[in-house]
Length: 317
Image (spheres, one colour):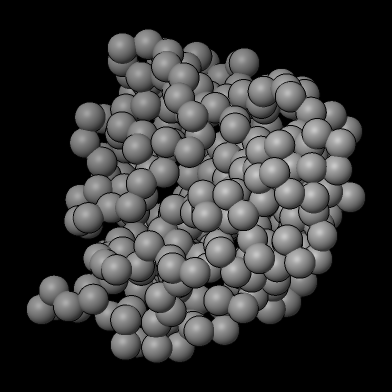
């Protein structure tokens, strides 16, 4: 780990002022469950680390707002949290991760791609600029949105659930506070100089806002191991019902693309129909109709179909 300056400001404004306008010069420290690993592995080498532990107003969980530094344990301890979000949080089984990991940090964690984590850059390229994932160790990589140059999968388990529920995020930067759909927080980078999120280097994620509306929601994850592992595929679903009929649906897949992957095809397959095994399966097939698996991850297509189908059935009750 390289030496760095440590700062612990008392306000968001002070924290923003300590950040840099360039990526790589300063990092935000929340729970540290991801950042400390990146520092130890030499993937991140900032000159300054800005801790949020003393910043007030970033904690707390309610039916309408989740503070960015609220922990996963605090999220699980609040009964007003929607079902899809709670189920996604329950998949984070490590007691240490629950106690220290923050909601904001979970959303903004860097990709778990082993090429990135081993120094080949965000896009996983060799010295000649060739992408390593398409014909390499790609069994955990993307099956959607993977036409290049990014092949990693978004690591967040909470993001698909929050996007399905139409959550927004509040971010603060030098120009003040702004709010945007959480869906807009993620992007597929086209170069190593970009990030997989749309935050600027001198912006801080301060909270997640949950709208009402009474949608029925659920998250279903498929894992290789149930303990301390990231899902192979997941799906979060929010259904607005009129009696037994789906009035509108939002279907978001996780761990299958460089961003949380919203499927408009699956949503159209559900709209105006009663939920059954057949309609859920039709929506699941529609959600993966554009999948393009790599050389070693074709299995993820079926796993994702299963996740979508079961999330729909759970959400419908």
